[in-house]
Length: 300
Ligand SMILES: [Zn+2]
Image 1 (cartoon, rainbow, N blue to C red):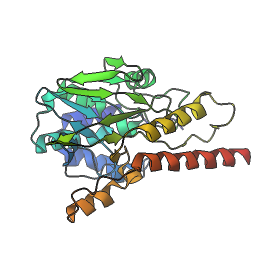
Image 2: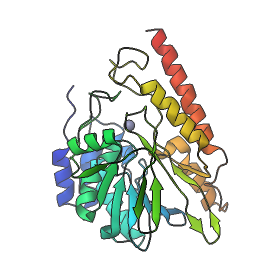
Image 3: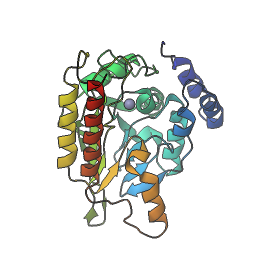
């Protein structure tokens, strides 16, 4: 099955930015993507900690890190999430034109689909790992993606700067260090940050997806077009286990129980987003998931 292009949808979204509901309706009616309506469900933006905010939808992460000299946005959701993300940035009192840099967890349509629109409206630069930069620039995945053939295309992003693992990206006083954590895609990246409130700072980690999901004809253990897939996963797990991590955030918020933690914060526990060992537990669960997948391939 050929992935349906989202170019026209993105164009439509671009034309109806002030009328987000119109764009959402097209998503909710999308029979090809049963999860899209749920992923794109509206979410009021909120402060995670210090200068770091959730501006994503209820089902897809988008993180805004602010400074007086410009902001960084990580992830763009679905193509039809872009109007909601823009509205969320404005709702918490920031100017979209002050977003100077857009980064990405991984270049699938549910985390990168909105970036072209967000880039066009903000004028921000876009930077990504070399593999993700290629995919973002095409708006289409590549054959070494385990999900090649089942992930959708989306509007291509212009002038994507390819960065190296460990590069520090700066906007004003903000400095984000790229941690490549591939496996789910060859170009996945995890973004740690350290927001402060007064004298207290927290290690907030926006950790990429770690699931060994694939097209039916892709095997993680043999004959695939991504020979370093297992090694990349193992590297990513080691990165996640070694990062200082007080607050874990994930591109799919359910993967880190964000809404339960947020509800607990709302119920009077101001530190409910903080969870000691959350990144280690996330990596541990991912290790188990990969092991299970490898075992299942041995039986096929
Ligand atoms: Zn993905």
